[in-house]
Image 1 (cartoon, protein in one colour):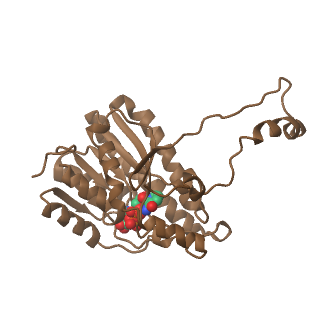
Image 2 (tube, helix red, strand yellow; image 1 turned 180 degrees about the vertical axis):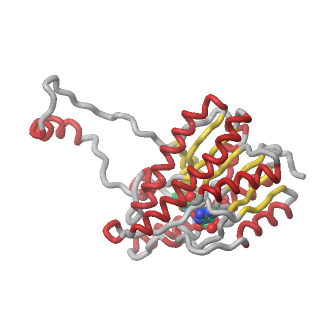
Length: 306
Ligand code: NAI
């Protein structure tokens, strides 16, 4: 059994680990001596259907490399499924040390055409799913006085993107979830961080490529592989990351970025209070120099990935 490495026999659950970024996290976790629960529902990119194949395939890859892993095919979107994911770790390995909330789907639609089903499904898998699995692990983390959460957010929420109101809302919700867990559970030695990845995967394959700019962007994204995300995830999940909590990182190929968190950037006050008119005349001119433009990720990440 490969127990050397930074995970050193720790039990790590990776959701959505049958493909894409999650698969590479699970493979590295196995190589770093983690006992890995490979969860994946095995559905389509927009969240339909299920298939045990992808999760089982990754378990076999980990075992073939000398590592330890078990598969779980439950959906993170159901509370009972999340409980079974944690139960899989307890039954197979007797404990759980880290949870990586990576499972995801996309149902992109321009906002005025976004259906309630598109909204519900994306919120359920990402935001509710991250809550479900975190909540199911929390009691174990509390009892053992340790634990690490790594959640997946996106620059589609942190910065902006077209056609992803459901996804952006879910991913910003996950930022709030992570920060709140970090605050509430610090006293039990539990850490919680977020990563906004950039990686070519089938989810990116669903991004519209109608304009030449969109096509070029997708070509650039293809050079960023999913395997580049895994080292930071495994670092944060392991004891090497013991001093890191409440942070938001981005990973793009060989770049690791620490992302900002909202703080006041400018303020105005009047001792007599405000009217709509004085806001227009006084507050607006003072504040508008610091307004954010309607940026999308590509407006902020203007340099080529390194
Ligand atoms: P992917 O589609 O390749 O992998 C996601 C996996 O999650 C799939 O294997 C799928 O079967 C599984 N899954 C979906 N719903 C599930 C459920 N209810 N329960 C359990 N498993 C489920 O996608 P990718 O790109 O690897 O995404 C991983 C994470 O990274 C997601 O949270 C995504 O939103 C996030 N992300 C990815 C970016 C990228 O550039 N690829 C950019 C920003 C965020």
